[in-house]
Length: 142
Image (cartoon, rainbow, N blue to C red; front, side):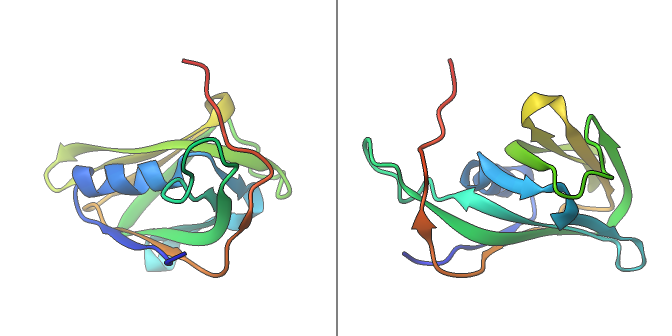
């Protein structure tokens, strides 16, 4: 399987990253904001939707994602002290406020959110290594 390396500079690009990271598993302790660098980063075990065909269980891959030019981070519905806590990423969205600045919102199962106030949208996603068999294919009630 080919490793993904994606860059998002607008909402359409971010929609692609959102689709590839849907159902990623993220440890609370693997997210952080480097205020001096104005960078928010997280590690995840993403479900490789691009590999899951038909009824097969599919694969997961370790991936890193970061957002640059971040001015402020707000967290809601997530216990940031529970470093071993596990979150399921559902979607990532960008809403422009005063072009090119805006709000990036990472939405997690159970209602948790991370909101990033950004000078402009600049996000990168990169796979970090070999894939492994997923225990199950994520499913959502319609």
